[in-house]
Amino acid sequence: MTKKINFLNLGKHPITNNFLKLKNPKNEFFYNLELVFNSKTKLISLKKFVSPKRMFNDKYAHRASASKTMCLAYSKLAKSISRKYKPKSILEIGSNDGVFIKHFKRINNIGVEPCKNLARITNKMKIKTYDEFWTMKLSKKITRQNKLFDVIYSANTVSHIHDLNETFEAINNSLNDNGIFILEDPSLVEVLKNKSYDQFYDEHAYVFSIIALKNITKRAGLQIFNIEKLKTHGGSNRVYFKKYNNNKIKVSNNVLKHLNNEKKIGIHKLAVYKKFSKNVQKSKKNLVEIFKKLKKRGELIIGYGATYKSSTVLNYCNLNHKFIDYFLDTTPTKVGKFTPGTHIPIFEYNGIPDNVRFAFLGAWNFKDEIFKKEKKFIKRGGKFISHVPYPKVL
Ligand code: JHZ
View 1 (cartoon, protein in one colour):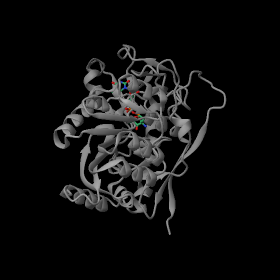
View 2: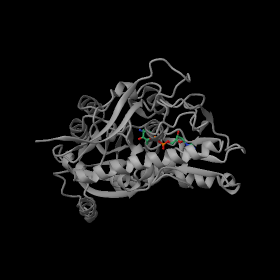
View 3: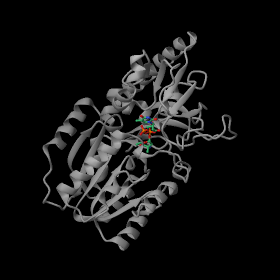
View 4: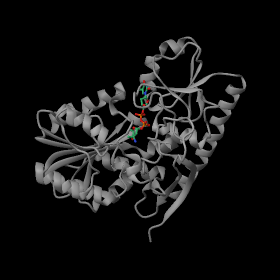
C-alpha cells in the first residue's frame, strides 16, 4: 500500500509570487508547507498543493532571462540540440519570457505558458504560445494544429505540475516516435547535500530524484536514456527521455551510475529525509543566530535577489523587516513591492550602496555571477550571508 509519510513541517507560508503592493495587506493567503515521502514511487512532494490558479497568473514576476548565467546556459543548450538532433519542430512547456525557445525561430517553435503576461511577451516575438496549463486536452489541441514534435523541452516547470501521470502521458502524446523529451529540474541529491530546503515552496510541488522519475515515467511509456548534471539553480539534472519503443537511441551508462549513486545515498529510504529534517532545523537556528548577532551590533543588512526560494527561508526562520532592511533586485516587476509574508521592501538594483556591509544572498544559486559583479563590495569588506550549504558569513 502506498503511504505518504511526513518528514518536515516548514510552517505557514505565503504565495511566493505574491509580491505585495502594500506593506501590510489585508487577507494575505497562507498555507502549511509540509513535505512527504511516497513509499511506493519514492517521490518527495509537498503534502498539500496550492491551487495553480493562485500561483500562475497574469502577474507572474519571475523572468528566466534575469540572469546572464541562465541566458548563456539556454543559448548553449539550444545550439547543442540543433547540432545533435536537427529537429524540425520543438515545443517548450513553461516558455516564460522566451529565453530558450527564441533560439529556434527557423523551425516550428511553439510555447506553452499559462501566465498570460509571459505568453504575451513570446507571442509578440512571433513565437506561437498557448497561454494554458499543460494537460492532455491541450496536448491534443496543439498536436492537431501542429503535428507531433521532434523535441519537447521543459525546464523548471514539470516539478510545478501536480498531476504527473497526465503530464508525462500528454508529453508522450505530443512526441514523435523518434522524438526526445528533455526535462530540467532541481536535483534532490543536491538539495540533500546542500541542505537547500528553500527548493521547497508553493510552486515546487516536487523535487525529483532519478529513481522517482524512472518510476513515474515508465507507465507513461517514457524511458530515460541520458542525464547531465548541471550547476544551474543550485544543482539540477537535465534528463533525456525517448519512447520505450524507440530502439535507435541507446541508453547511456551514466543512467545506471546515477541510479546506483542515489541508492548509495539512500534516496529511496525514509531515514535520509528524517536526517535532512534535523539538518534543516539546525540550519534555521544557526541562521537566526547570525542575524541576531549582527542586528545587536546595529548592522544594516540587505537582501540580494528577492528569489522565490528565499521566501521559504525568511518565512520559516521568521526573518522579517526587523532583520533585513530591504532587498535589491533587478526584476522590474518586483521593484517597489514587498516580499510575501515577511513584508520587506524591494528596491531597484543600482549597485550595492556604500553604507551596506552585509547582504543576505537570496539568489545563492547565482553566487559565482554575483561575486564577479560585486568585486567592489567585497573589496571594501562587504560580506554575504548564505544558508547554503550551512549558515555562514562569506
Ligand atoms: P532565481 C523562480 O525561482 C521561480 P527563484 C520558479 N518556480 C523556478 O523554478 C525558478 O525561478 C527557476 C535576481 N537577481 O532565478 C533576479 C538579481 O537581482 O534564483 C531574480 O529576481 N541580481 C519558476 O526566484 C532573482 O535574483 C543578480 O545579479 O528562486 C533570481 O531568481 C542575479 C543573478 C539575480 O529563481
